[in-house]
Length: 514
Ligand code: ME8
Image (cartoon, rainbow, N blue to C red; front, side):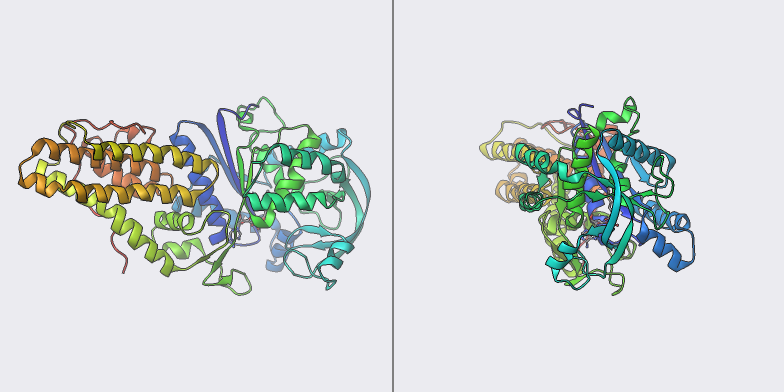
């Protein structure tokens, strides 16, 4: 289990009590972009998503519909599995917590915790929030205002009094603090790290980890009548999908995960409970947990009751999937909250994609066809302007990689966009039309070569964000060689295209949105 050479990115597994919406799409697109970026740099990559099927919330939702929990899960799973390909989500696996392989992993995790003395049996008498699947003590409710509402979601909590297994979370206060301090990158963004640190420094109670009052979950090994607390069950998916507890399973090479991408709502589970569980089980900890912010729609919180949750399918009826992917990661700094509106999307699309990028591709290929019959000539002698252009692209590649390691998608896209603007300036300043008029063929060839080879590298860096749009752009650039497997793989070095290469005729990839 080295985790050095390989890259493993996960999304949360989504509850099946509800249909997928914009929020689920967001995390999944972000994870997809990371996975594609890593594959592009040639790294052994594994990208996992899936669904969380157990727990009281799902059981209640099924009951309200008068169907079995598994029937509800099957229905919603089908929606996720039909949705992801429509957004080019390239997950390597899809884990369901009702599957035998996952339940085996959870049972093994439980036994390990128990053998290591991290579990004990007691009696739980406090509060529970079903929508959040979270336990609350009297004190926590009191601090929140004593109104019988969940400190996280503000919905009514219920009284729970039952025999329960407990996890010795309180033993892990100091080890967790030490881990945060020794691994400053463990939690991102930085502000969230401070928040988690103070939460843990405030003291940890042991955690109730089994329930007896309903049965939709993984049975506690060797204790009939108890089911495993849904969060212990769910968090274990990141390991069960790799074949845990079989440490020899080939996929176990991906553990520890490189990054768990989550929303800020479930940070405590991932940055406190999960590492504590892993410590107790004697397993390596993930390298990073990144909690992104919250989307609202036209200024309002999305909710089932308001019926304003934006469905990804409905969004596709209005806008291309790649454009939605681009917008989600470009508009809002990853880690901040944001508001979705089609107006903002249209503005961004028209200025950055239709105008800047689309234009650059179109005018470059048009000029190549107009002046040189679509064929690249010799590069000729490099001018300072050419060198600045190449240097900018090479610097961009390194910076994009650095930003992607920090999940700073907005900065990566901003940096790529500065190269696009540089490219348009390069065209203006080199004025290929004058070179053509003055019959300066050699220099004209040099300029067109630099432009088009530069564009190829821009498109390559953008391809994790917009795989289909980039494939269409790349096909035009690569012309006759469009179907070569390498087109969208890691030919990131300057100079792949050579004299004599024929590009395809331009056809607009980003028509203006009115
Ligand atoms: O919490 N803005 O599942 P869940 C941004 N099953 N992201 C959002 C969002 C919004 N408005 N709404 C949802 C669960 N998300 C557990 C996870 S993991 C071991 C178990 C995204 O269906 C965001 O990633 O409630 C958030 O963390 C996740 O959906 C919650 O999905």
